[in-house]
Image (cartoon, rainbow, N blue to C red):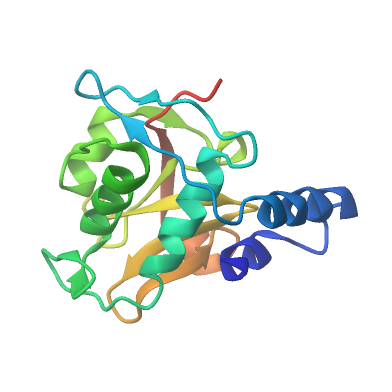
Length: 177
């Protein structure tokens, strides 16, 4: 779990951010949070644990997927494509069913600029020159988790030149309080 959090941290962030993340990690051991969906497309939380946030649940779930190989059309830990990964994570963490393709996700969710991204937002890319061709999940500090065709599920960085060149926009699925 520390893997994703350490990737999220940057030398430019103040030490308070590190202490906050560390304290959340330390106090979260052994607690669980459950979600239930009462209506398709909306998420309602069960009683909250005071020591664990939805962001932590997201990061924990993503960590379970790191290294899973890429497989076009895949949606499990034997092999997964980018939208299959996003769908599986959202189903587990938020009990939500998302559209199965990156194009359908792109046209469904509210547009978010790069500077306004929040943890859990979707990030969309155009790698083939034909519109939306890739999706990932933003995890903070310019980092995002995605299923790379060559490396499987990995953490990418929106500041990398190649990624920046192909970034389209973010998409907000869940409105945070």
